[in-house]
Amino acid sequence: MKISTKQFGELEFEDDKIIHFPSGIIGMEELTKFLLIKEDEQLLFYLNSIDQPEIAFPLFGLRVLDDKYPMIDNHEPFGIVTMNSDPLKVTINLRAPVHINQDDKTGKQIILDDESYLVNYNLFVE
Image 1 (cartoon, rainbow, N blue to C red):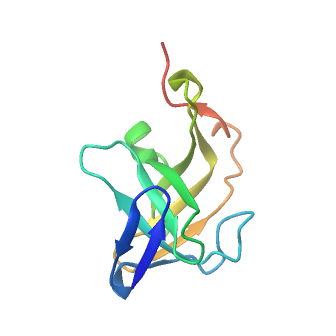
Image 2: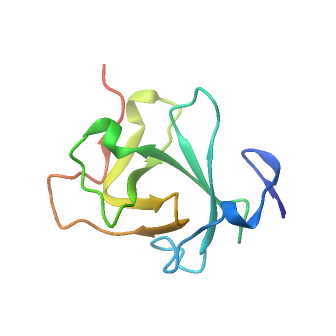
């Protein structure tokens, strides 16, 4: 299969690379098929929609920030990153992580009922 993306141009991939989100992403429940993309030497992953290839979510592995961050059903937690031209304003959503199991190619997004996890956690500080 092929898709044309804004971030990465044309991508060719096999069906076994598709990560299925049965319930979609919060606010975009109709998007259920994604590719998890990581460029060499980059901090961020990208979750690129196959259903609408122009949509991609930058992700950061949350266990890099906190090795005790909760995993759910063997799914690795990632926070959606809000980008900004000012690095000090780049934030990660710790409250509604995206959980991905790369072995069985499934994903889900859940909202944690724990106020210690911020919605806008600053990734970089001075």
